[in-house]
Amino acid sequence: MSRGITLLPIANAPNIGRCNLKDPNLNECVGKNIEDAVRKFKDGAPQIGIPPFEPLKISKMVIGEGTGPVNVQQNFENIELFGLTDSKVLKEIVDVEQDKHYCESFSPKLELIGDYDMNGRVLVLPIRGKGRFNIILYNSSLTHNLTMEKYTKKDKTYLKMVNYLVTITPEKMHYQFDNLFDGDERLGSQINKVLNENWDSVYNDVRQGYENSFGLIFKGLADSLFSRVPYNEIFIVE
Image 1 (tube, rainbow, N blue to C red):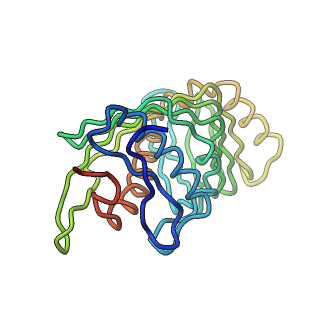
Image 2: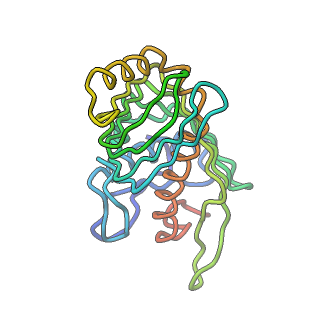
């Protein structure tokens, strides 16, 4: 364990590590604490406004049309994200002076389940439907670029997110859209098969939409914590 780690004193909340900003192993400390926090918030911390991370409920995601094979807007609602708490932090770089963080993480399985609605074309094939969907991203490498700024509230200093940029590179993906073409099982099965056989082309054409959506999701989670916990209760400032 890195030097300078203590426990964050929030009543009835999971114990979260703190890092000394002068710790020579600050990057290691912050990376470990982020990974630990994600696991400890598995069931959430309602007393400080943190929702359960497993599954993480997302009200809506919109993945716009691509410029290549994906000529359809994908509208997702009532989403549950599974697998976030199994993520591992591989690298963390903290820029204390600029309030910037760079992180590399790995998620063995990220699974999205919810309701979808779309009507358009994918790989020149028509696709139309409304119902339940299941999308799985396997062995995903993620990068996180965070820019924050400090502000004062009731004589205490807090952090807020200015930007949260994410890249997501999965090793493989699986798509399942139920009730395509008003429940035509033959057509629906064929389209799902084509999507899975060409998952990389399908994903890469609209990956910016997924990355933007995940960036907003992660930004919201970070703001939920940082808006409630003062800066000096997250970091030890000497």
